[in-house]
Image (cartoon, rainbow, N blue to C red; front, side, top):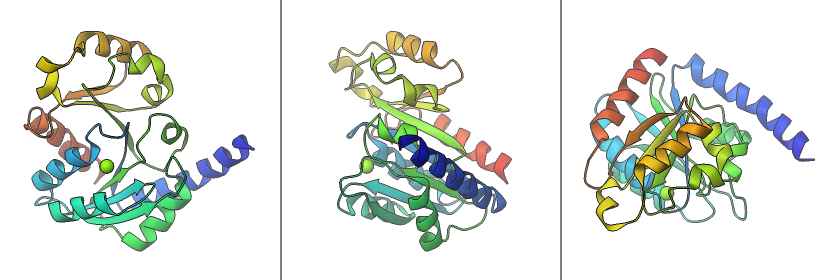
Length: 213
Ligand code: MG
């Protein structure tokens, strides 16, 4: 049953990937626990980059349109998807969302997945990069406890580094664990609220958009 669902999803995800690549749209699938700061990171990213390129966002949450409203206020074109009792977005939801959102050619599309480290990791959405956001208010052993999302990720953003003096999070231990699970991860250490590391993160996004175009 689960195998059938995943096989069907993989097929639809490939279709999404082709659709996006054909339009030179760089698509990110952003995943994290609730409260790691995905939406805040997005707001700051949109403010910095939307002058360069149009940015579209697909927001996944079980309920409300709060995050879509936030990223819209920051300057993005946004669509909210509510999953009800569902714990993740799937490729069909993204296909439907793309039809409604109509993102511009050569733009950036950010998909903010439903907040948890388990189900979103199983479903390919057709993205180019999988971005995992972890905050320093979580445990530094997350890579060992939830290895699948780290193993299948391309980019790891460690957020809220401004809070490091106040928490027991050990950055070296965390990076060592993450590296053990997936040595190919590209890592950014940021504080979306204070601004640390956002230059490097936005620079990487810009150069990735150039290679997509
Ligand atoms: Mg959010």
